[in-house]
Image 1 (cartoon, rainbow, N blue to C red):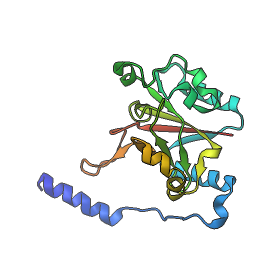
Image 2 (image 1 turned 120 degrees about the vertical axis):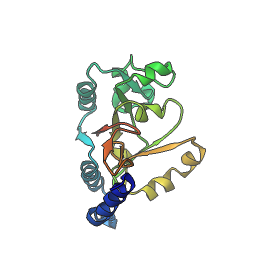
Image 3 (image 1 turned 180 degrees about the horizontal axis):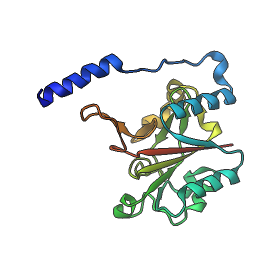
Image 4 (image 1 turned 135 degrees about the vertical axis):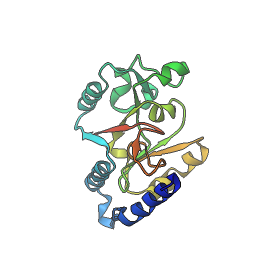
Length: 203
């Protein structure tokens, strides 16, 4: 069997055995914060995102400290990170740092502009002090999310932030670790972005 035949055979097998999870759209009653958070956490688990929910600002900072440890960090500007997390990372690289220093970071630390409960996605709109590289370049992405940033659907986010999106250079949607199966349908993590995503949700 030629290489071409082997690849096509694997595609046919995948079509027969592939699993597409059922979509569970939000009902009108699912607009409470508790419902949004519960749905968001379920979707994060489905897409392989590590997550924790913290009840105080201090607990958020403690969790960030425990995860980052002594690793090199590329982060959003301190004033763009919630819960005072930026103050913990005073020596981290940021968007103004030399490119080689940004490229050598082991972990990227960001906030987010919205957390989409329906899909377990983060929305990050580019802007001052919010370099895209922080969520895309390091092998680990740590995102700190405010509960108030939870949104039910992409549609809600688009309607609410239409003006910001129109004026932004870029908006990145992150749904779990980077993954691809371009090569013979073999799933590989971390090829086009972080292979590990961690989300900390604060009060």
